[in-house]
Amino acid sequence: MNFILNLRVIYSILFFFIFYSKSTAQGSDLPFQSSFDNPKERDCWKEYRLGKKHQNNWTFSTSLAFSKPFCLFHDYPNNAAKPDTILDCFVSPPLNLSQETVIKFQLILFCAGGKPDFMDYFGVWAGKKNSNPRLGEYKEIANLSRFAQNNSKWNDVNFVVPPLGDSIYIALVYKCTNNWLTVNIDNFEIVSKELELIDQNLINSLINFEGTQSINDNFTLTSTKNNFCFLNIYDQQGKCILTQKLKKGKNSFRNKKIEPGLYEIKVMDNFGEILQKQTIVLKK
Image 1 (cartoon, rainbow, N blue to C red):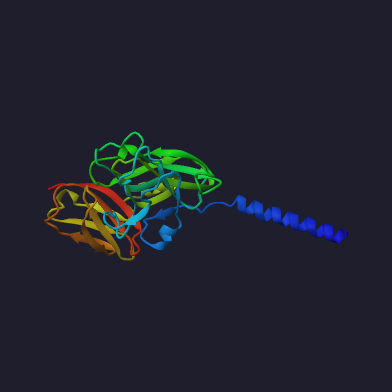
Image 2 (cartoon, rainbow, N blue to C red):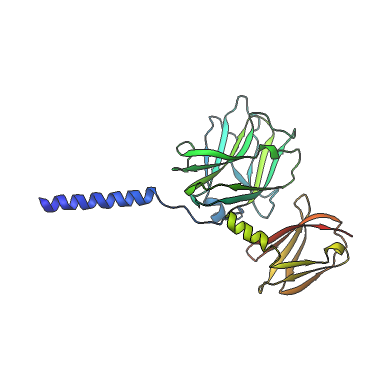
C-alpha cells in the first residue's frame, strides 16, 4: 500500500515538473528573421482571425516583394459592408525578448485616399501565455497606421521595444472596414538593441565606401569578407537597379545609367542574408 502511494506521489511530482517546464518554456533566442521566402520562414507564423466577418486573409505575394520571391500581404476587404469587424493577426513563434530589442522591417501601407478610415488600422502587438490573441495577454507596442500613403512605396520601419519577457509572441495586426487599405511586409527582423548598436558602429567593417562623389564615372568598394557576397543598390522606390558580385579586396564599378540621388546599398551573402546596409547620396 505504501509502495503504491509512493508511486502516486512520484508520478504527481513528475507530472508537475513536466507541466511546469512546458508552461514556463523560454522562447527562441534572437535574432529572429523572416523574409517569408521559404516554407520555414512562413510556417513558423500562425494566423488568427478575431473579427466576425472575414474577407481575404494574410497571404504571400510575389507582385511587390522587396526581396524576391515573396512578401507578406493582406488585401483590402472587397465589397465588405459597414460596420465590418475584420481583425486579422499574424503571430510569430514565442521569442525571448527579455532584453531591449529592435523590430525592423520593410512596409508598404497603401491607402487609395492616402489616409485610412478611423476604423482602419495596422500595428504590432506583443503577447504572452498564448499565441492566440483572444486567449493570451496582448498589448499594442506600435501603431503604424501613419505610414498609410497613396502609392506602393516601401518604407523602412525601425523601433525599439523595452524588455517584455522570455516567451513573447509578436503579432502583426490588420483591421479594416471597406476602405482600400492593403499591407505588404518584407524582411521582418527582431534583434537585441545591443547587437544593433554594435552593427551600426561596425557599418564599415565589411565595406569601405570610397569615391561615392563620382559614382556615375567610377566608384570602388573594398570588401574584407573572404567568401563571395553580392552588392545590391536600391532606389527610393525600393527597386534594385544594380547587382554585382563582390570579392575580397577592391571592387571597381562603372555604371553610367545611375542618376545622382539617394540610394540604399545592401551587401548580402549567398543565402540572401543581409550582411550590411547603408544609405548613401550619390553625386556627379
